[in-house]
Image 1: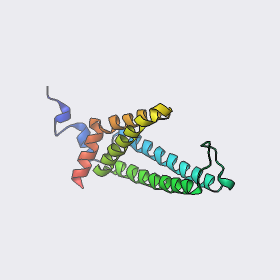
Image 2: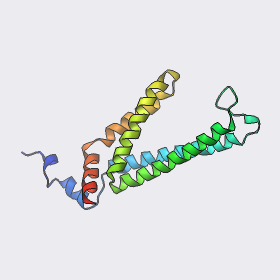
Image 3: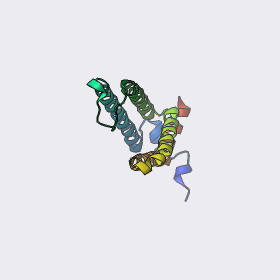
Image 4: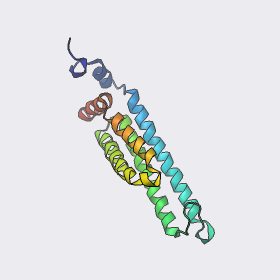
Length: 151
């Protein structure tokens, strides 16, 4: 018996060539879109805090400059737009989107380690590790390999 996953006539490769993306790629794209929505929510919250009188806010024990909130809003908005672009690329089979998911998940994983003592890093650590594992499964890698070489 030969291993079908390495065969050029593999049914999943044929399905990919016909344009059927694996379900797991759709799940990854939805997760990235949810990340974009979180960033847009963070941007809206930062704008809300920036316009509060007297620099009053609810997230820290001390006053924070309005510029902090303006910069947070701007960066969150840009990140949200980047996440939307990445999800679009993932659904299209763009190999650069696959690489960016790996890079961003690794960066998030790295910084989550430093957030663990504060108590906020476990969720980011788990989600980033899950994204790295799922994004590097054979079905996902095959999707990006077939479409990146065909275009």
